Amino acid sequence: MQSNVGLVIEEKAADIGNFMVGRLLPFRKKRAVGPFLFIDHMGPACLKEYQNLDVPPHPHIGLSTLTYLFEGSIFHRDSLGNAVEIKPGAVNWMTAGKGVVHSERTPEYLRDESKFLHGFQIWVGLPKALEQGAPSFFHIEKEALPAWEEDGIHYKLIAGKIKDKEAPVPVHSPLFFIEIQTEDAARIAIGDRLFGEVAMYVLSGEVRIEGNTYGTKQLLVAKKASLCAFETTQATTLYLFGGTPFEEERFMFWNFVSSDKAVLEQAKTNWKEQNLEAFPKISGDSEEYVPLPEPKRFK
Image (spheres, rainbow, N blue to C red):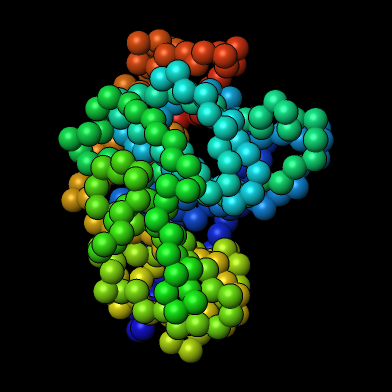
């Protein structure tokens, strides 16, 4: 990103259920990148036979969730009736709209075995007109994602669109989420395919920009997408994500996102009172739920 690194965000620890993750967004100096509002880097973690991922039923409004795994498996259930195992390379895309409930757990057949878990959990904001729309769910297998090679560099478009490539994930606003892999040192100039805002996360290896070297556990936010150019110095896997930002500010409380604070307050009440019209139960996983956290100030 020639003369283009506007912000370097260090990955910070956070908890999701009984699992430690590295939180990349939101950050106090950068609340979003394009429509991307929230990014957790899960793992990598080796879970013993007595350790499992267990995130009980919890609600969302006003966003789409994107789950993408590098290793391991998560079983997803939701209040729309979906029950799907997420495996590496596949995309889980759930649009909450006016309200959805889901749970994320280690599949039954792995619960008594040692296993690895590593991946991304991402929230993407919705256009204002769709924030209170009907919830929906799509699962896209890895074979359906566009993948190609140019000059020995491997690309995969996980979601969104860049020029002549488009992923089958049914996104709701202009965005992109791209995986780039190099086997050794390489120069990559991709700015002419990008738009809006862009950020980079280096999963493994390192990149060099303007004479500075950056490695893992850092999120690099560009000043201008069209200037996105960089070098890898070794075998490297990185991700570029971003797109067109929304005009309206998005407010977040816990798992709720909205451009209207009153909508957040109603969602809090609905979940606290277990309003089944707003947040239906999950078939096959309804014996527990994550309680509403103590009130916090809007961020």
